[in-house]
Length: 467
Image (cartoon, rainbow, N blue to C red):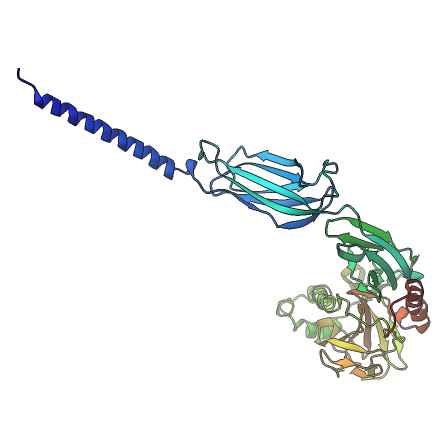
């Protein structure tokens, strides 16, 4: 019987091709799964700090990200024995980055005695890898739960603060995890210095003369975000400040103003005399005052056992020719034609031409140079956030970082800057806020509102042996 060997070979060959095609299909499918973004294998990321303080109601932010798209997340809080879910979510649309805001529940059921707690964040991406389960990532942080707010108490204070004036407060603020403490006055924060005994603080405060409301309070915040506020019960004394209407002459506009305008090319390019005056009186003034505030914003440390001041008396036999806080309206020919508005932030004192100016108290020079409308101007730091400023000087006899002794001549009066006659513009600032100089020019006020407060605080605090 004759066998058909050719047919068998063809059949065997056809089967080999089928296996090869099947192998190629499997390899292609495997390659697709391996290379397709929908089956990517890179796990997501959880960006979580290793430990943090937390209080009920406080929110923290956790950043999560994935190279293709986030799927879902879970945030769990645990005390070592049990965990509770405090947040979870699913991303319905492709999103590569997100920030989760997590708030600690007020009632978690966890044991506050089991410290520290832990926070676990788990994230899954949108990948179909792992049989559709995707890639996962997790991060754990130590949670230091703090539910107790700082303790704050006023120890001693100045009896009163006049509108535009200043005062002193000494207080206690304690917390195991204290992070920040300050005195809030409107939008301004006055930074206190540690006072003698640990947990006690002292600061000068100011009532800005343009603010109608003065409601100072001590604010203490711990690392968990717990916050305590305590009002400072100063007697508030209202004070009215002068309103002046000043006519502008052509001689003044073409002389002094044109001279000062040359300091700024943009202002010098203004041809209209009234617009140029406004640019000097408002624009340049704002820039000059920003420089002053920069150098006077922070309180320098002092030795509270020795920090005592004498009344400021910078110019011998001086006559006051302009007051602090004047609201000055400038007009040209007609009062109804107001050109500009500004406020006078110091006392103008006049004596003789080029009269010597002295520093009444020890200080460090923080600025000595030319400052636009203020002319030649040194600024002295007396410590504890108290600064004095001397404007329009004909010459400055001290340099920056120089230590000045009480009674030392630091400059001579003049008419540099926006000044028509020889005089001294004397300003006092408390942590960058201009205050009424007259308080600090009276020894009885310094004794009753500053020195007496130190004595009262020391009597209450006790301890803190003197060196």
